[in-house]
Image (tube, rainbow, N blue to C red; front, side, top):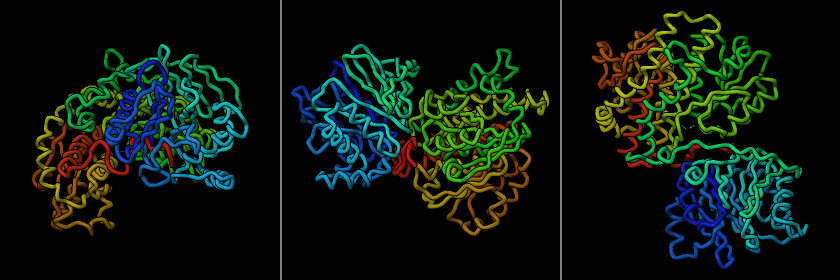
Length: 614
Ligand code: M6R
């Protein structure tokens, strides 16, 4: 939810920290701050409300010297976003600074204890309590910073990724994690630290992902040391990052979101690459083949996910029931984790997450595992917490998604779900050769089909211009297109702040139709397929009530195109593949409306890219 960066080495820390914060700004952008030990040995803390650019402005003409520092970009949990609540927080005596991503749940008890001992607090945050607690334990026990951090973390309840700096030790950063991600980059005489690999990949390729309950001693003169909370030393598992800097830049587009929408022909290609044999006749997914029995004997599949990933799970429900004949449940991870869900032998849980760090999804996985389920992950971020917490899985391989609104990750998730369903359906003998070949052929042609839709961006932009006035939108779809309608509505809401509702088209007449008038436009996905005629009736119901209709139809459509006010055409494909195409114009539509309204498309208000707190 917040972004953490750290550096210790022989270079000037400030530019590295600021650049890193910019890369992590998608994680939170309420306030930002930096703490560095200057060349003169002072602990300088600069922090301010607003974005990283506001911090840069604030730090102008200040002492930004020093080769060790930590920095933070915040998405507020405790305390409103203001200068005081911004991180880093520091101890009363000004010697220890700390940044934190997560929530300390028992901070109230600790704060009361410290207050009784005379400690005072400047902010409303749980994080300031943690740094004061560490300072207190250090003074009480006459111990090292590492020992004080370890002692403190043994007493706190909650989620954290932290980095701690001590004014009197210019060589060392102490970092720790529990339920929030942290990765250490290893260079020659220098170390980098970050919430994910994006701020690190341009400097080093060797990284260590800290595990839950681990504390790292990052000393510029020494090899990296990692211990758990019981002081047992962990084995260092060095991984290589394969991230390309150009993937982290806008590449000439005005926004990451637009770049990511236009990247989809390539990201779908990357997602299927190596998973279809050279002859183009078979899908091969090692995660499924390695666990063949689990999927062949699956009594039920339960998807757990949040937001857009949950919508992908809904599409998974249609796919797995339709192609594989397996019963499916789709659960909001946040609800699943607090119920007492019935998990029976033979249940397979599939967790879907772009970031691989969503706290609710992670908790749902742990619950499912504790009840004996086999848990499979569909993630984008390699080495993420969910990728590591699941028994097996498939990466979507769409590259870093920076725009807060998920686009290419969604189509990557759906592509993986299609491939999984095909493999399982074939293993179960549930799919005919003809159907299998048709789906595969169209999957391979998907990048071209998407290019075809993207080429209509000016047309979609024009329609968006006509409807930018609207205060409410309805999105309708049936069958495979119902989850796509939900996803289209979410895209519009999150980046334009226009209220939008996604609804199964036929369900509209049970209530939602009351909202229809000439000021509430409806987007209807009416592509060919088993429910095409039914959807036509729904369009008639809207038109009869004076509603405006923008329809997503197949090329050559002659019926809906005469009824709808505006049409956007997508190529005709097998029904199970329609979400991959219908979602593209909805992404563009939301994007152009948001731009017309002057919204911050990549960093919409109140949101953050990955939700690592409850
Ligand atoms: O990283 P995850 O896929 O687990 O994230 C889940 C949701 O937070 C995410 O999809 C969110 O809904 C996006 N902002 C949607 O565009």
